[in-house]
Length: 393
Image (tube, rainbow, N blue to C red; front, side):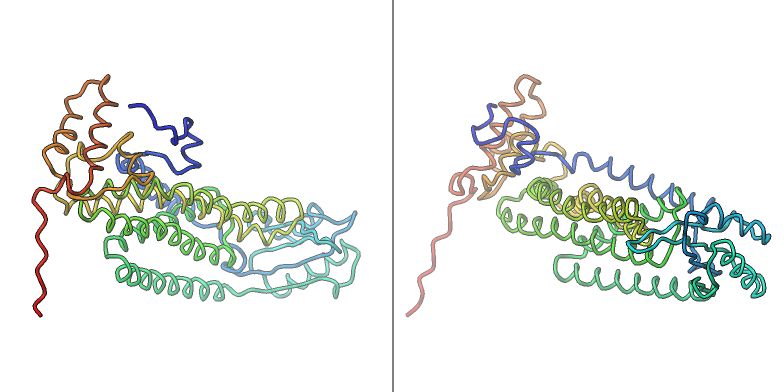
């Protein structure tokens, strides 16, 4: 079938103008396979490597020593070696600011005598007094408190989200949204365990922020699905079609929202932490960046296809050939509208013919299917309209 003049001729043009016809439901198995791989990799990595916990979780001592031309990361590491402190579990970083730069040293818990000796050694090596150094001690129990509170906050958040979505939309949408958030969280956890990024309190905060972002992207899609469900209520359209139409309609909006959210986070990570040396920003921005990218994927390939699968099990028509594809799907996406009831002989013949059509007649079949689906109500109603009852005076 020839494409109308108002449909863009290129893929990017159709994406920009909201004229795509992607069969998301038809590719739902891809999302399922990737989600399973993420879960398996995360679980294996957790058991094999575990988390690389920072000082706040494992406990220990930390110093911040003024840096100079004669004192840097190598000199700080040498001080640890001279005082018989292992450098394998230590973290030594150069932190730069506008007015000064410093060397941050974090080690595992040592005795008070050893900590005092290290403080004096750092002061001597850097050529400053002990008062110019910053020293901090963190107990391991403090990290346990953070973990417990984070887990309680996570459970409460998930319960509230499930109740809200069930009331605002329906319980199957709540299941799909929770699955998408679980996928995003597992992907972020898997990235931290596989690549051994250090977990700090800022990382935990970012993990919780990821859930909010993932939920927002999913709710945008579900809101359009519910809107289209009411729009096509009289047509008996299969639910996977409604999901496909909704996903194509909000695809560009999701991409724009994601890009506008990811760019500032990338600026924090690469410019703030990488160029300007604000290392503390990287602990938050890294987890947030991973979660945002995962949220874009899960809202498209996890939440929506899962919702369609749950709803399709209760629908009347479950055959793959009943779904709109190609130009028929594009016609619905661009707002051609569907009215009346789908199921007339003409509509059924147009749909059934797609199974027996040869490759050269595909466009003709799409045209028949589109015309059958988008007929005016008076032409596809299977019974005459009921006369209005006169009101009694």
